[in-house]
Length: 296
Ligand code: GLN
Image (cartoon, rainbow, N blue to C red; front, side, top):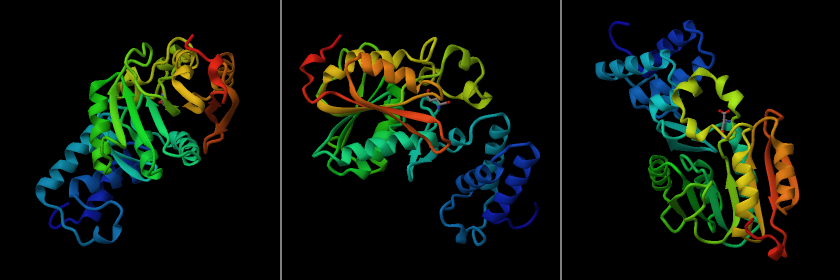
């Protein structure tokens, strides 16, 4: 396009190119790319027709478009993504927050609201999106986010600061959930969206996921259940009596996880569907009299 170009024009032309290339969510993605390149508020569409883009902004948009057409997910291109009404910084060291996971976050917030000054442990925290959204919604909660990736923890820390949470509200701690040697404290709520993709599913991931997202955050062992086994065996004993464990799971894993939790001595075990109708969350409680649950 020659002459003047507004952010709106930029959006339209990007959308057209994405559509021509068969990108399904062209509209949303064009909006994100144009907003980032033209530095306009993506939530305030009213300014888009009045904001003129500079040649260098146009060039940036072009570069982003090229990356998109090479398959890179738009969240990694623009470096941020929305989850639970908050915008999170993301890099390719963390998974892109999924809307499926909002249902886990919802359930954890509901649990946290029932308790006084709840101490929350977010294992495999990645970008920190679950624990941070929880801390924002439950002002008395304090959250510890644990991850095996130091780079992911940097992202989580940055997100906590971005959302005004000091270290008393949201702390990061490095740890290998499978070894659990250095996780300190006693908790009321354990929330975890672990890697749960099976060996077979790893082969069939969408190209955008397979090529760009961290496999460390996806692969949950041969049957995808490695982390749930560890959670039920080793973590229940680290929680307060009556504490709640909430996990996200793959589309056909909920029943197996319920069985594992049952074997681990947890009680009041249940599952919850996501918006697509898939059993996505399993929750369970440490018995109020939990002396019988010891680290196994
Ligand atoms: N839901 C993610 C996916 O299908 C996987 C997330 C995870 O393993 N925790 O790509």
